[in-house]
Length: 370
Image: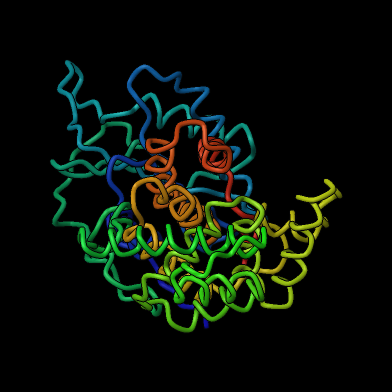
């Protein structure tokens, strides 16, 4: 189902941006790619530091914009906490040089510029006006209701916080993770002593016997608070071959998960080539995943990250970053990956995702028009 919303002037257009983005941007540059007279959504980039080269930044922003197929026009909105400056000739809108550089590169690329606007705490303005003015924020109507889009009053980081957990939960999961690790170690090396925690043995058997089925069942009960279930997932997510197979399974289906799991085990044992189909999913290419399925997976790993002891958090945080990126939520992905790198600087997967985010790369399926 397609929802069509019309904007007849810049103020009405600004009222639409939160509905298109899914949040109310802050300290951001928002680009809205158009095909003809329609836009399918919004792309957000953090406002850069004051010493950035405007032309270089505009080039990066344009490359991100042109990832969207069939783009022939663009609207840009700068959301800033800075106010306009008084100059002898009138007013100077904040980040004017950045906006001008972006408008210029778009024009040189043959893109029509629909709007170039600025929203500040003091009001909003139009970069394309010959004589800039600051108009009241009250002119901007409330964001319209759009099916499938909830509350948009929060900024781009709203909802990225991990669920609450307490010390008792984290200690319980930590003990379960220790016992599970011991059980798996003894089972795989045939050194079981009989003193292992019987619950840990059962959890280890579930993981070792059929990992894809185990992680598939997690999507049916994302709120499962069993410490051994959480520990088993954390154990897997902190082992890159298993983590990667789990992520592409959640982006596809159970059958694909079995293929990915077998391929990752083969790669780990004899360094055979991982099938292209698995690598393509991991890089965001191929059929568009079921967003509800990815959302359940994200809920699962966010809960695991919240309840994990400090030394076991990174795998779940990295998984949360990839799942957020796969859903087109790069701002949330950045939050998780930054925390992962704070806990483990140089972590390979977290560093890769950080580089992807820095290059403003999005998964192809997020850019494809429905």
